[in-house]
Image 1 (tube, rainbow, N blue to C red):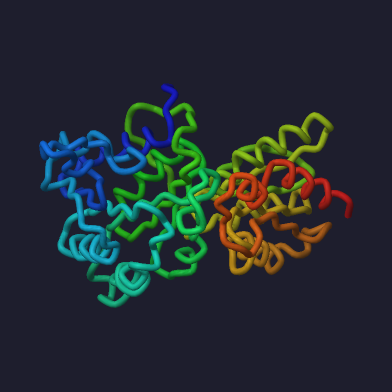
Image 2: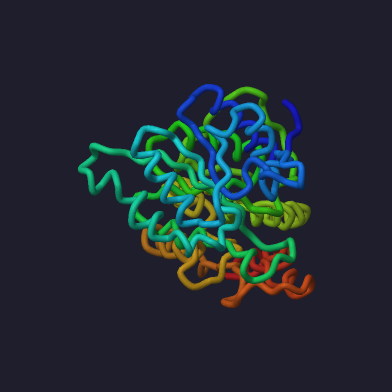
Length: 336
């Protein structure tokens, strides 16, 4: 298989599916590069992170649509287009801007199928970049997937690597439900083996990234990479862990997590979001409720503090859960 970055894997998924299905359109701020310079020529750079690069030259203005700077308009138009038979991919440049279009997401797109008694569907995919680690400040560095995970009717996808990103994106584009697709900015350049052709990864099926016997570790997005480092370091001492990447938080693969906890008896959950009402808290509560008798020690959550993301490089590095903190948490849970 070819080594590809997560950015390129998502781009490839969009190219493959747009070629396969003429109903798929892409819209958002600068998704085609915009009309730049005095010449009026388009750079066709594919947005601020280059994920939609190459789509506009191939599919043109009718299917790759640069929009005004209005998140409400982008998501509202995408939801309406989905009801009318298209399959839109709407880009929010940063996940932090979701508050501007929250009504269009949680009160409209997520509820259309329910409100229409199952007679209508809203196959819209909302792509957005999230996460700290690139010194973009408090308003451009948040991981707000807990907000959307809490919304009935929305599917929430959080890939941690290029292979998963491509397969999950193709699944999202072929489905009939609204999907929020969170892409961690710091993972865009990270490479992995990715097949050239189309393939799908089912929603609600977690990935077992590492296998072990002492502790179950559940991590999301960039935290999977950090957890791998911590677990590999501990393995040199004979401490082995199951590392579970849920890949989707709605639906959540509870069965895989509970089966692992039943085997190890210990759980550490790692989440870049602040702790209150986080996905870490949700998974911890689920295991405490459904797998309590399996636990040999209290559940440990490793999260960011309950504070905005700092801009300063040193403070941001301290804010984000690190491999060292994860390793320390695993050691702590093994004391009981």
